[in-house]
Length: 296
Image 1 (cartoon, rainbow, N blue to C red):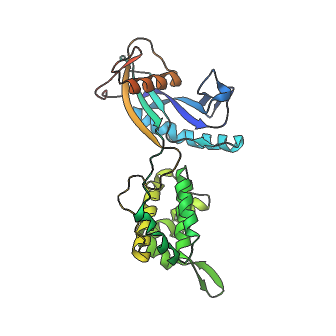
Image 2: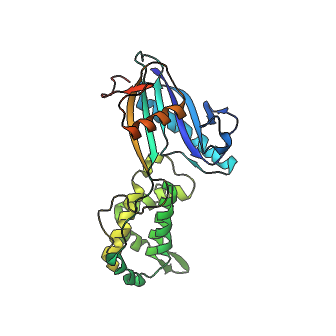
Image 3: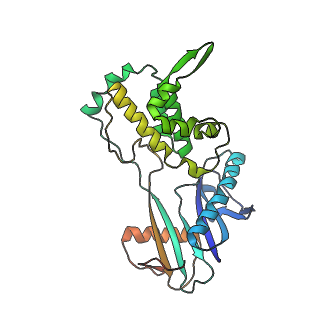
């Protein structure tokens, strides 16, 4: 195994003035000179792994629970995804190669609202539970995965409506199956293993189990509106439910330090930002590796 130094930017509104160490991770302000105006931290740790990708996986898996704790005690938002970071292999790396994951906020891109959309509005009065629209809209406003997922699940249940069985009033599971299909319904609601139940009952398990769920559920809702109420929402839209916030593009790259080794995350990211804006191929700090280095 090799030693990999990882420095990971964490967007947050919690202002960190004094660096600290917790559970093997070192936390510091992203901007050491402007701590009070800094909207991010840097989490650092040396990870022993066979490859840089394994090191990233171990790093993130261990980091997430610590950031959740920081969010609770600080009463502030933290964003773990869509952040820049680097991985520097400290052993068996004579060429001083570094892997950089660069994330850039690109702002939102809207979708046109014209006669096609206006003509669909009157049809929406035929939907029994009009409150479903609020949940679908809130899913569009959500800036995190689980928030959007929860709102989409609420939208499904609102669309399905309620039925009375004896003295009990409960969600119409047959209509939910019509919306989601039997397979997805079982994945979400099966007794003991359903992901919806685990999520909302405080026992969601591993994050990878939820991969792709928000898009899958949203597409099911759109199809249900189309086939049941003839509400023709446009198909083939890239990244539907667009919002004002957190719209990013990213670049992955291996770079080779030319001379001095610089491992300050802010300086590395600002250099990459300048490089991409100016389209300059080489800088004084490092040079782009056109091929991925073997055994990194």
